[in-house]
Length: 163
Image (cartoon, rainbow, N blue to C red; front, side):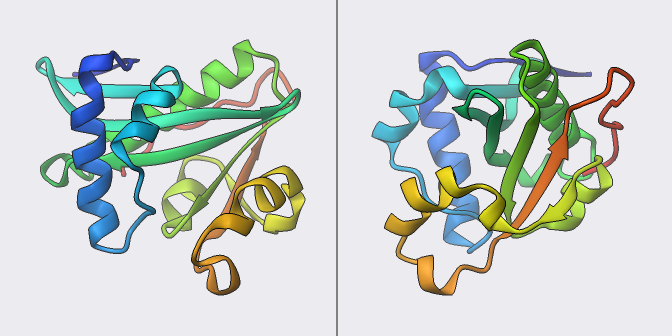
């Protein structure tokens, strides 16, 4: 059974190691440990049998928009619904905050499409592009794909799908 909970300070080293593992493979961007600590309230951790197996952050960008960041799952738990559970937890939290949209920049848009997101133009999110992306070393050669989920409508739910 997958349990998704808010991250604790003691989860920061696990989050950092997991993000670094995938970033070193070119599947996501690196996050310094200090940044993980600074943003720990944004993070959630998935646990199976009490052991951490995945992480994600929901970063609020403004009154109507949040970004899903640093979604990562331990390699041995891929394809078991951990990623979908983490995204679902973020979407539900975004709903509780009354946000209109949730987006992500990803190298794996197919995963997000399977859980209800659609591809988008990154320029739909100028607060991301001009506050953060512009400082990224890959800004002029970004390979990430923008995906978005519109939260309007009371019946919309993110389907739980395999990673």
